[in-house]
Image (cartoon, rainbow, N blue to C red):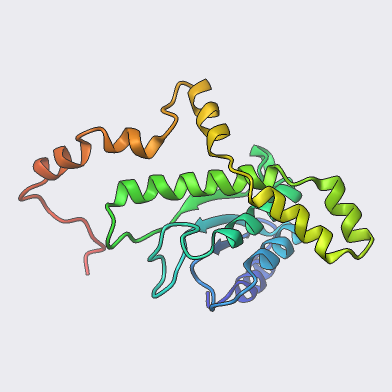
Length: 197
């Protein structure tokens, strides 16, 4: 679809089982993606995300690489609407084309960026934000969001991973393996995957 509005119109015509998949790398520069997220959540029509980022071409960057604050604002809308709950019906996916960095480390970095943005969104002082919004205090509301955004959540996420028996730094743990070299050796002379074009 050319844009989220067209996708929504099609979904409305198709019925209650049709939902919009929002691709964060398919928008014109400067698009307020978090507003689109909020509207689709309000209408109950956000079905999924294809998380990526773009600067030169579609899907060419790691999630949050071009504008990490925008990723935080998107996750903030998801938290506000309760769309992190497993029963929310909103699915989260990565849709990226890594051209410079290795694909698996690029995917791991993207996941870590989404986790960090989500953790920061969960830290927003909702009561203080609501108070500032009700009072029309734009600077106060911005301050509440910036306080959460500027919080370093990496140590907390590392601790959470360790509590679940995972490496505190997934990228470092992966790079310490020889998996990339192993699969490169194993695939020499193999058939390249593709769409058959």
